[in-house]
Amino acid sequence: PTLLAIESSCDETSAAVLQGGVLLSNVVATQEIHQQYGGVVPELASRAHQQHIVPVVHEALQRAKVPKNALDAIAFTQGPGLLGALLVGASFAKSMAQGLQIPVVAVHHMRAHILAHFLETPHPPFPFLCLTVSGGHTQLVQVNSPLDMHILGETLDDAVGEAFDKAAKMLGLPYPGGPLIDRHAQTGNPQAFAFTITEMPELNYSFSGVKTNILYFLQAQRRHDPDFVEHHLADLCASIQYTLVETLLVKLRKAAAQTGIRHITIAGGVSANSGLRQALTAEARQHDWHVYIPKMEYCTDNAAMIAMAAHFQYQAGQVGDLAVSPQPRLPF
Ligand code: ATP
Ligand code: MG
Ligand code: FE
Image (cartoon, rainbow, N blue to C red; front, side, top):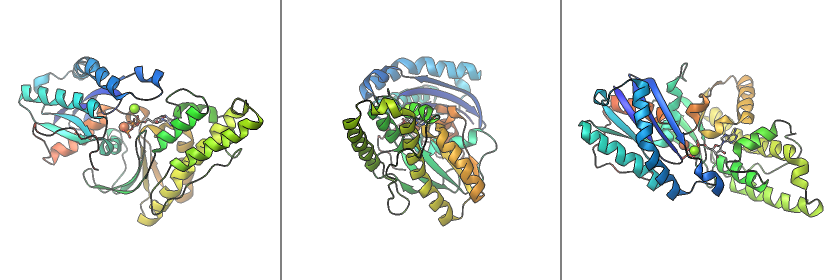
């Protein structure tokens, strides 16, 4: 099928065209407006989506050299995400589909993050494990086929991306601070400071404890040295990054041992983290894992992954009618 897909769950407006499973275009407009507020402002996100959606879809079709009437279906992100943001993409997709008399395909954002692996070759064989690490989620998923996947474990509070961003904020770094922690960590010693590696039952995660741990540690150090952070920025970033990555790895190792699955993948924005990538490569050597990491542009929010998920759903006959509405907390 020839599919147009739209992603608008958070602060990226994106459109992509996929034909027979081959990506023809993927256009992403990132919203800069949120940076000055230190986080995504839902109301501003919706407004920016409204401004971006027409030009972004137009450019995606143009770059793909696909006319509107050659489309078989239009896919959109149904959830999870910000309601106002999701509504823009969903309403646009439904109106356009109605105009063209073609079906819509409603896609789960977190399943799509995982299926981004199929935009490239070689892709992992089934079954595989996926550690999905993003700004809003931290999930360990067993993937048996494109449509058959289940969560083995997940965070019970904060997401790991959120932990990176909040830690960065405590260090006085601008939002989103995850990539900055990564950058400063390059020249720091990961063993300089020891933070809590929280171990939750089963295969679940928790990242709220380490946040408090870092906060109290910084408060105590600043009493002796008001410029403690400035003096130790690289070591602090390296130690925080080590702690967060190791927290992720403890459960990944456990999941791999429990399931016997050795094809390991990561997805979501935090897959950009160089500490996580290096650690995975080292683990792969040690445990004889095959590790798959998508291209950066397919790790962060994009419509290409929504199109890929829609491709599998369309083939299975999972097309929706115009009554399907966005769900901010869409269950996995
Ligand atoms: P979700 O998919 O759960 O709805 P999201 O789409 O907002 O959330 P992404 O865009 O996939 O999340 O990822 C953004 C997160 O990734 C941010 O928290 C950001 O700080 C983090 N991040 C990006 N690059 C890096 C990096 N190099 N190191 C650490 N964190 C990073
Ligand atoms: Mg984002
Ligand atoms: Fe996302």
